[in-house]
Length: 165
Image (tube, rainbow, N blue to C red; front, side):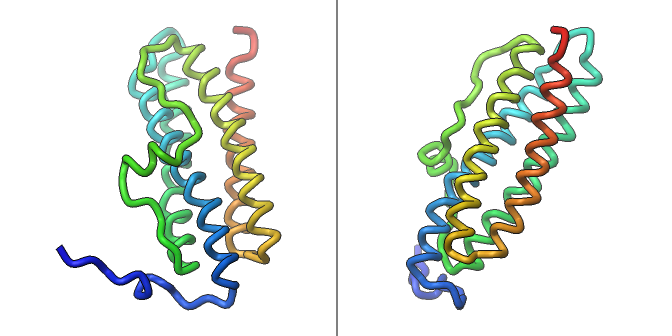
């Protein structure tokens, strides 16, 4: 199998190459967490049970679709910077900071788990935003600002859903 030469991946960009590399090093772990959060949210959507099944099932379906929509945008942003992004599930596992959920949980525990993960995800996103902002990468900061707002909304909905439990 023929390997593509690295210089052919270096998309022209006016940002300094060291800054672009630093941005990619910040975005790629966030992308890995995006994949992990998507899979966990979809997993809980599939395995939801209980008296509020329909509401929770639909909530998590909506949230998983929103999270999945972030994947391509983040990966392509790294490529627009002329850098390499995630290649495999193994690389996702290496880079992700969010823990997988391999066990069956109660509906309440699923929602609580997602609430905590979204809070961690939000914190990580703010750190990446800071890196991008310091490097004058306005495009990535703009993208992240939208995703920060979406994540705050997911946190709000999960928090309110868990009230009086």
